[in-house]
Length: 146
Image (cartoon, rainbow, N blue to C red; front, side):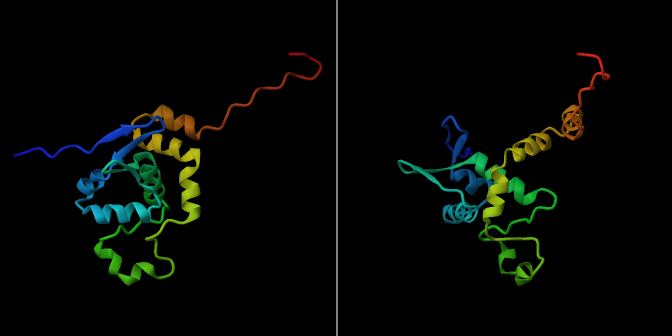
């Protein structure tokens, strides 16, 4: 059985950009659907020669915001659920378009911290440090100088 070629990955210094074939293979979708997915996630593609790339970090950050506890969820293009009108009723958690508020939340540096914690669930020290209150310095008794 022939191995499928891996999608091209470029590191441009500000994170990796990955060829759109990554999405095609990951989700088993066509190029057209992958491009539509990027458009719905509001991720701009990068065209280099005949290849199309996208920011993997932007993709991960947006998906993290959409799928973390309390996140709204997302209905991808080509999903069967897209035609279920119950998901569009008021209060339904799934969305089909990314709002400016979600983009702002995904751009917040705190999201990177949350993502790092989720990637290392076995590292209890990291979790403890994240949730501890910062230590406050004790004030010297009155009349004494430090």
